[in-house]
Length: 285
Image 1 (cartoon, rainbow, N blue to C red):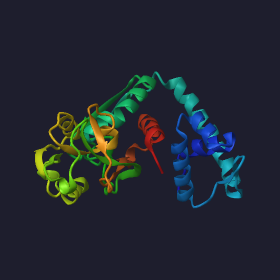
Image 2 (image 1 turned 180 degrees about the vertical axis):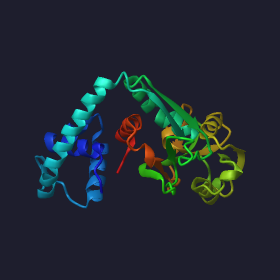
Image 3 (image 1 turned 135 degrees about the horizontal axis):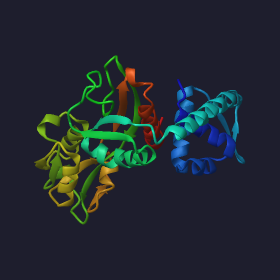
């Protein structure tokens, strides 16, 4: 496993601060997120890096062996940041991104605004479309998908897992067993094989499909207007006013999100800087 810079920052923060809470504050993360990412990092490297004690976190022998390498990586990263800072206003060019509609609007947009403020001469174009733009044909420079990339020319990684939930209009009637009398807002027939569609059919077999759309934002808006229940990604559903998540015994299946780019672009500075920011803000390993 290759440790990326976000892994190194997390490891160094815990080693220096001694507690998850202090380390999380130093990186602008929450303590639960910090703990989750540390567990995932240790699982990925196959080593316990810290001893958990009553006084805090202490490096294990394996962690101590990693520390020197991590500090040298930090020195190189700081040198790179200084170089980029000196050239930041000159760093320019274009990046074309591809993602689904809701993911672009509710997950990527805040990160892109942050990136644009730091590098104002880089023009980012975000294409939100149900079509899968081709990286080998250079239809996009960076793509976000809910399925792994299979093209041999593409460098990719699992970025994050997204939980889904069943939503209804605030103050609406909770569905009865089997969904009898309930109305549904769901994906159009071209996406009938998606896991959340199959989940709805199985959990609420007596419900009636009232409206279909391939656009998750449209589904959320219809749900808020009282058109019916909808299964939505939680980063979207939890952000929409007028709807609430229904607590069900078996939640809808979540989805993994993958990010990929053409291998010829791996040394493109503006792409690396944006990708590092995305990973820092979103990645859970």
